[in-house]
Image (cartoon, rainbow, N blue to C red; front, side):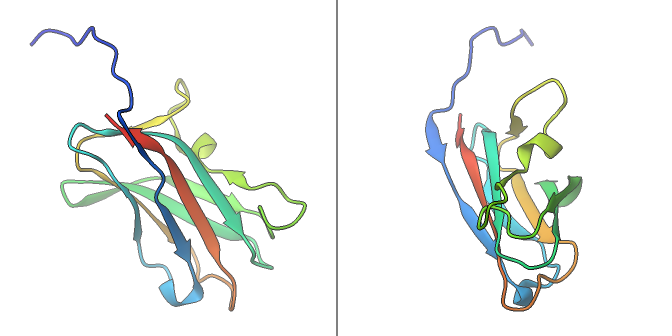
Length: 131
C-alpha cells in the first residue's frame, strides 16, 4: 500500500456536548462518535458548577472495547466562577500533537470517577470535525 501524501482536512464541523449529573454515577457516556473517515478532536472544554473537585476519565472505544486515555481533574467552579474552564485535550492528546484523531466509527467516552456532587453538573463540549 502506498503512503497517503495528500493533506486531509476536517470537512464537517462537530461540537457535541454532554452533561454529567449525580444520577449518572460512574457510567460511561458517549461524547463523540467518529465519522466514516475518522474525526479530529481539536478541543475538549470542561466546566463544572460543583463545590467539590471532580474527575472525569476518558476512553476511546474501538470494536466494542474501551481503552482508557486518561483522567482529567476539574477544579471547583471551573468555567463558572473566576476559575478558568479546563481544556481536557491537553491531558489526553499525544505529546507531539495538538489534537486527537479517532478512527472511523470509534467513540470518545467519559465517566465521572466518583459520583458528581449532589445538585451539581459537569459539562463537556468536544470541538472538532469529521474527515
